[in-house]
Length: 277
Length: 114
Image (tube, rainbow over all chains, first blue to last red; front, side, top):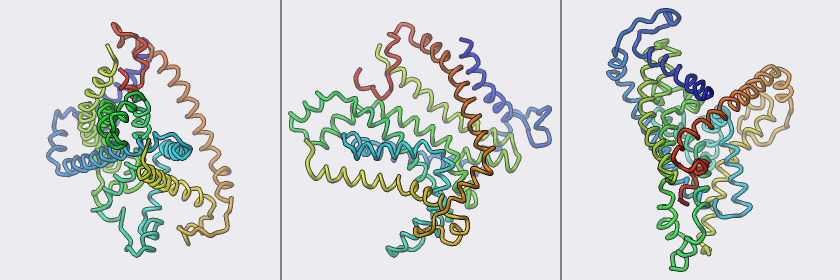
């Protein structure tokens, strides 16, 4: 019990301060000392600012890319790598190794690879495609970063879905084979429905991940060019720590926290529903 | 029991995955053996004289950072072990009242064998 108390205290205290900050007027001049309470003014400001809404749409765009990649590609890769063999093991090991790298490291690698004169553009030049401004064009940057985030998240979803697939009882698959179902029919009609609870949990985790994804944006674009890759966490960070408008930053953070909390509730309920009575 | 075309498709997916994940890794390793001037002159070059200078530099100048990282990892491991283990017991004991405690230890991945 004492451990639980300490854990809860450590998790809750910063949230309380964050919330307090979001309803006060805090700048660099009064960060230490008294904060004057301004009620919901910060929320009105943040919600009235079109940049917050743009950031929300960008975050949702990132969510969509991640969901598609994690669930669809994750299912395909999980299926492929669930087949036993040395190749599967090697590829899976490689993917998990990359997944375990700090995002700052894999992010800066991609920053070089995707540079206007980077490896990818040079390779495209060889086949005759002009350099693509992956990170320097405001239109492409968000989707490029989303792609890198998806790349780094794919090993996790593959691992989870592969694990769930391996737990599908062999008899079920054999029964399907005896009934004349081919590989793909079995995948779609038998394995996919059995994986639905796992898929739900993975989807919720993915949304939460999209709403807290910050490090790749920080390394790759710093929210730019212009404001084209400002998602909610990025916007929150730059408002608070480069424009020194701590309370607005805190407000944006509280807003995205509400979304995450809204996703965390079904997650916990799903997890509990998984436990047989 | 998998048809040959499917097998071929599997191989293609595996190769694509291997490329997607191995190339960035290989790139970072290759670049680590280049000197700063080589990186600035020809960042994408594959043919170059490898050097260990950057490693020497990092181990020389970054020793303090390495020590700091070690300190952080040791402290984090200890704190997490000391706090999370009892907390997990507390959570398990509380949440699974009225249920078989052992069922708690299943991973969500094992959801299909209810």
